[in-house]
Image (cartoon, rainbow, N blue to C red; front, side, top):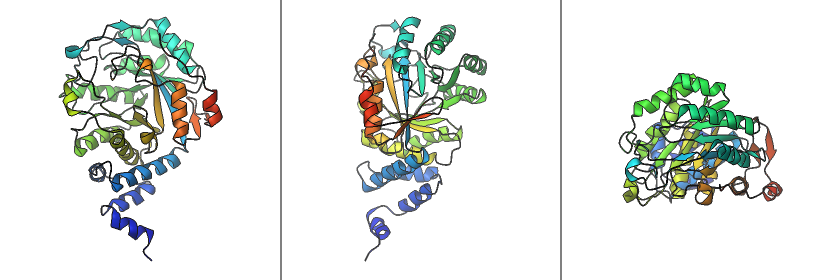
Length: 362
């Protein structure tokens, strides 16, 4: 009789099982091994085994607990960063300009946090933003939402002094990325992005990172180099995000990767961070079941402006609400939700049915 291991070895690429057995023991795959794992077609048996392995390992690593994060995009305007994948690019901007008032932001924040289950609320601005207005927004939101819900910023570059000031007002983290082909597909300076990441780390804020925005043209080597930056600088959250097809965007000619390919990359990110003492969770953007069964345990509910959406309120289009997020996590097999104060609540069918479908329109 042929052993199960021998049967697998006859079906999959040589050495892959060794990589996955080592991962099960908590050993990070090397960058070269990550490139190898990303070189398989997403429909291959190798990719399926990588995703299944990352899923099982991550569930054990995170105690099968999931997190829901929320984000409010507070403005739309032509952006001089000119990212070739973004609806706000100054060169291609066609949307009406808009900016939520503080009262509107508070209303959105309360709707996202009213059941107390949101781990953290993100406040997102354009790359160029009014720093002092952001301080006012942070103060107002901190007073309006549950004390155990964290507040995180997703804004343009900032200094160490600004990071420290925001932290004193109640910010606990920041999302910031030196993206794929930064400085080529954007007009931003990669070093400026890295300087802000350093400021986040030095101020001891939680650093939320992501391998993004991934398109069909990005090679396994490029993807691994970019995801390894999060490992190198010790992020709090690692994640993956595919570039969404936008007809008017310059990169639309390349199309969009499948959710299956995104799940494969998510699995490699989950495995690549195994030995990290700082990585606390893994997210997948936009939320989908394939990613949540390939190593990710975080989804985002979104409202307001969204760089991947032509709707002024993404909650009416691409964004999901808290009810949908909770249901998706339940369907993915997670059994508990972790709140911002690290307490947990059971994630059950009853709890998803009891959650009100909330409209986040203005």
